[in-house]
Length: 68
Image 1 (tube, rainbow, N blue to C red):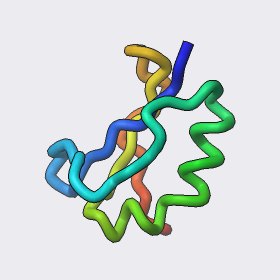
Image 2: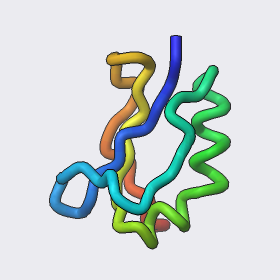
Image 3: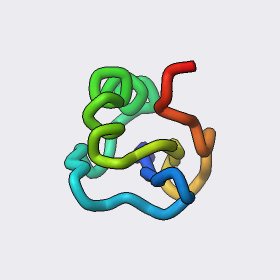
Image 4: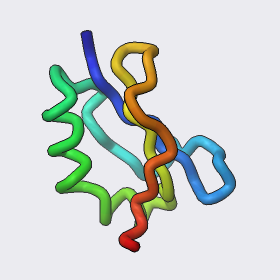
């Protein structure tokens, strides 16, 4: 099983340009750790929300990268 992120802009469209994460992560913890280190760069690339997937299963979705 592999974990990966899906990136969305403010309008809900997919963001693929300007984001260079690893294709997959071996665990949920690895994926979340990477996001914790990289969320600022993702915001700069136009990513507003992320969805974490395990293979095709959604673990959680549309999590905002904006601090509240």
